[in-house]
Image 1 (cartoon, one colour):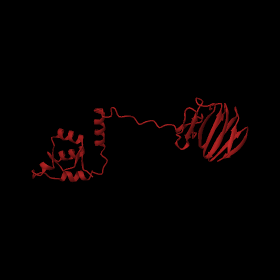
Image 2 (cartoon, one colour; image 1 turned 90 degrees about the horizontal axis):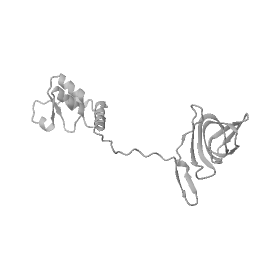
Image 3 (tube, one colour; image 1 turned 90 degrees about the vertical axis):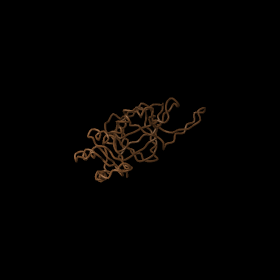
Image 4 (tube, one colour; image 1 turned 180 degrees about the vertical axis):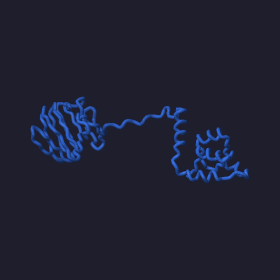
Length: 220
């Protein structure tokens, strides 16, 4: 690991009355250390010159060795400052936005295949703070009279009033549905049908994943 000489090392040398600071090959001198050395009149003597100077002592480097494993905040600050000052980040492309999912198909016929393992979810606004529910529509009204998507619920419950008819299949876990005072449970592999206008409480004590289809294309 390369040694570092920072501003504190220069300050310590100056306080001891030293006007020369010996620097071994491969040692990194931070920009702040160079600036402070100029202010205090301390000169850095690098390895080649140090060999000709019999009075140069390496006690400063021994002290620096104790710091080599430390996190040099000063160097990081100076580096960031230099980058911003010189606009070195200009023109660097921002990371591309992650697609909601990956799909393929045949445009002329309208065939579409959504690769379920690539779906990225977004938080579902249930109107209830703290709800851990997410949704991603994968078929929309711009391409079908129906809409379809994935819904996940984790240790949460919330109420929904459906503005359209909905059919779903539970892919993972178990889902509790309460309607008209009665509670039912649908688990992995079960299919559920919720009529339009129904007021339903959706609940998952653990993690549940559902694929749902609404008709006509809509979601509430």
